[in-house]
Image (cartoon, rainbow, N blue to C red; front, side, top):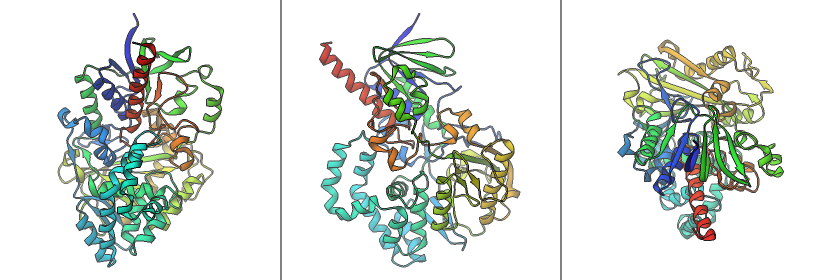
Length: 529
């Protein structure tokens, strides 16, 4: 017998679990179907590399989750979530041995910057003060459905107090120019640029300044927290809340088809032959290319949607390396405060060059890397005196050439992944001589392996599609949408492929769930029931 629910959520990643939680809060009956053996999507952890070490399989640090009104509203601490923080939020060791350091205490950050370049400390505190006055409205505008009318009005009201159009110009400015405009020393510039490098927006392009400012200021206000015990504890807490509210989660239940009748989503089918009928909504926490022409047949979609999807652009792929170390990272120059996150690049210019290569289908010889000292952030991750460490870097989805001495072609088989991991490890060895001798075990996840573990990470892409301006706002995932609604009634895109895009903030899932609730209310008014 076919089971019927008010809503079926496809995918138990963070966005899917956020959507399920909100719909349950509204009194809906909800079923969550997940293809993998457990919930979490790209927010999961494991002991696969070494039984004594916890490694976050994909994402690791969660400033957006800590700053998200949506996720905070769920009070996940009641379901086992505990946040942990490292002594410093972020560090960047320069070839000179100096460190650019982002500390949770802004006065400490400013003092460190001022010691390297007098005047930068005061400039940093002014920037923080500006963010205090308007940052919450900027975050709200980024995370709410487009157009963000209420946050935009709130930001406009505060704009005169933060410099007016000069502040707007700073938000639109490329991050390399923003850094030069506000600071004289290397430290604040490379911290801003490194945080902008978390997306695939070129550092010399509009939008990179906003990204760099957002993540840097979140580091200064909420830090870069990690869930105690592993990233998976965040999504386990979300799943616990779903179950506590009466929702149902079924894992090892891969959805293969969303049924559409007379233009409305009416049911989903799984690979094992189960059919689940839907009264009001299907929320799809899946990458857009898997939804349009995949779970939803092309015949059930407008021809224009399929045509526009032909130009949908994924963000770059990823190679991630996990290490189990028998001791702390042997830094050539010890940081003033131990950072949980660290970036690897010789300079802003070298970072820009490496990211430009990736966007030009070229594998850089010296990749820009993002890395995490997880035991430094959360001592439960490995035995005392050891370190659970990871680093990742972006690579082109389609490789035209490789500038390294040990070229990769894009096959990303075991041999290529291991050779590229050697290149990444050598970058850390330059900053921490003897790093290799600390390695107890190493795991390499290349683009194919990442997609095999999570189908939404197409080619190892982490953000559900490029973050560049031509595929944001009303252009995400295709021109003319920009919201969670799809051409199929009752079907909502609630993944990172929808506005506002990648990052563990839950906004994509929440926007989809809220749209479903609003449309249900409208149907009741129109139909009189």
